[in-house]
Picture 1 (spheres, rainbow, N blue to C red):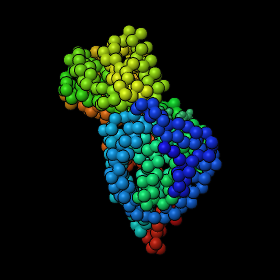
Picture 2 (cartoon, protein in one colour):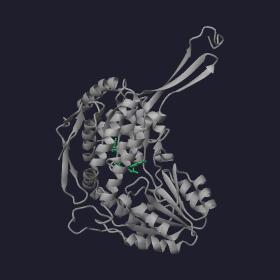
Picture 3 (tube, rainbow, N blue to C red):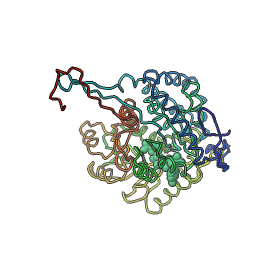
Picture 4 (tube, helix red, strand yellow):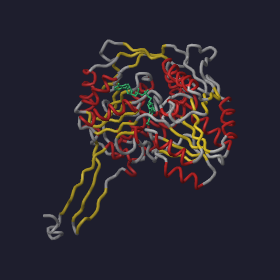
Amino acid sequence: MRVDNFINGKFIPGSSGNTEKVISPVDGKLIAAYTTSTKEDLEAIITTATEAQKQWQNITLKERVQVFYRYKAILERNINFLSDIIVQENGKIFSEAKAEIEKAIELCEFACALPQFAHGETEEVSVGVQCTSERYPIGVVASIVPFNFPSMVPHWTIMNAIALGNAFILKPSEKVPVSSQYIAKYLQEAGLPDGVFSIINGGSDIVEMICDHPKIKAVTFVGSTKIAALVYKRCTSNLKQVLALGGAKNHIILSPDAHQEMAATNIVASMSGCAGQRCMAAATLLAVGDCDHIIEKIVNESKKIQCGNNLGSVISKEAKERIENYVTEAERQGAKILSDGRNTTVVGKEQGFYVGPTIIDHATPEMAVATEEIFGPVLTIIRCKTIDEALAIENNNPYGNACSIFTQSGSIASYVSKRASAGMCGVNIGVPVPREPFGFGGWNQSKYGSGDITGKSSIEFWTKAKKTTVKWNPEAGINWMS
Ligand code: NAD
């Protein structure tokens, strides 16, 4: 398949002349190719987006969201087809891919509901004097997205930003650019005017151009912390509004009183789902006191997971090697491998990139497997004597996306939730993703910028407030700052 830019309602190849291949991690086969973009391609998009936005902002919010009612129905009709594409380009299993589209549908529902709560406010601030606050779109905006959710992460921003009156440019991950082609096709089918949504394909050079371009007024980024920091600094130095979500190293604190089945199944699902390539995945298990009975269940649960069946591939050969090297290094340093997913192949898909569920026990807090983002189906266990020792390890990590506690005690749950240094906490939940209308966003090095990327706080991000103070009656409030 050929992957193109989407400019003014048309699919047009990038003009650099350099072709990039898209390899399926499922079996190592070529599935698509695209030509990378140039500065001229981005300029062409910005010109048409600027024109389109002028018209789009003049329509009411109620009318703009009608596109997303139709778009939601299109997503629902094509859910299996879209899920298959995600499986091919990203490697996750079908049910996980389908969950991405289901989440996109939920995000669509939120965007459709915006007229119910993204309205202005009016108050009589002095006798006969009214102050009104109204939300205005920002203009042309852009989102730069990672490989691990080819459809869900773009949908975090596309619909709210467009519904609120902006023109939107998407820079997909070069590893998974195919799903975005169908976002463009279906938005057009739903009646979105040409130029309001655009796609530019490419890598770091295009990202830098987006950060630098004065006509792009706001940028969101989702990806690794290293690049999030670069994008945040570059955009802010260009006086641009930016929210940049970075990587993660999520901790689960396990109390020995936890419900055994619930803890084991949830923890294994969290560490292995999407092959551990989730910014909300369980990465480090802080086992407090004697948790052997639950750890044994976790290991047994992990044995039910089979690559190519209920566990997908990781994104690339390099990712597989990186993940396996982390495990080998931990073993060399004295950690115990309870479940070993290295050197895994799937019959009939020998060229795919698979890592089986891997559990490392008796790691120390200083080991790389305990501190760095591995982004694979690997759970590192650190044994702790007390909840406070576990919390100290969690608090000391530089990231802050998610933290969960597994316990049957309300007081332990509340003690941990209050003290964890993470933006998204869970109690007996392996993947504590807040659902709409709550916003998604971490703390510390997992997010640069203020507010969350979804939910109500995204309304603040995608709009600017205009406050108007009005006095009509000459006799009213004559002393009101006049
Ligand atoms: P990545 O940082 O490598 O790439 C993300 C985007 O940045 C891509 O579009 C890529 O083209 C671009 N990019 C890559 N290198 C660049 C450079 N040097 N300069 C400018 N742009 C560059 O991330 P990835 O590997 O695609 O995704 C995995 C990472 O994303 C993990 O760290 C994961 O935790 C993180 N992630 C975070 C969240 C969150 O909500 N916090 C959500 C999903 C993924």
